[in-house]
Structures are given as structure tokens and as C-alpha cells.
Length: 109
Image (cartoon, rainbow, N blue to C red; front, side, top):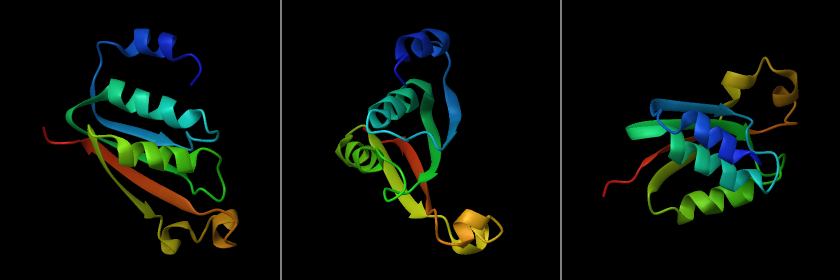
């Protein structure tokens, strides 16, 4: 996320109806970068879906959640990934990692 200028140049004329990310927030500094990327890539009427470890497992998630709440241009929801969907993954089954899914879209203006 520290090379956003290169990322912006590569994607400046591309917008997507669906933006998907997994395990993209690992540090406090990632929170703002992920939101910048979503804003850059998500088309009008589009959605972003981010799957990430919860705050007790990943640095930066609290900041990511705070920035999502403060964002006036975005609407978001966050749910825990239900246990039946992760029961075959050993670290998840043992409660070592809680995954969360964020859905993000543009707020109505």
C-alpha cells in the first residue's frame, strides 16, 4: 500500500462492478490504502467484498473499521464468517482465527 501512485497510474481508467480482496489489512497503515484502492476501483453502483481476519488477529482492522464508519461516501456492513463455512480449515475450526466479511458500496447522494 506504500506504492499507491503506481497502483493509481495502472488503474486510473478502470472501474469494476465488483472489487474483491482477501487478507489485505495486516498493519495499521493498510487501512487507509485499502479504502483508497476501493474508491479508485469501484464503479458507480458497484460493490467491494473484503474478507479479512478480525481485529484480535490483525493489526489495522480497528482503524479500517473506524475509517469505514467515518466515510460519508461509503456504506458498509461487516459480518463474521459463519462457522459451518470454515469448519474444514484447521486454524479456523480451532478458533485460532476469526474471519470477517465486509461489503462496501457507494452511499446514495
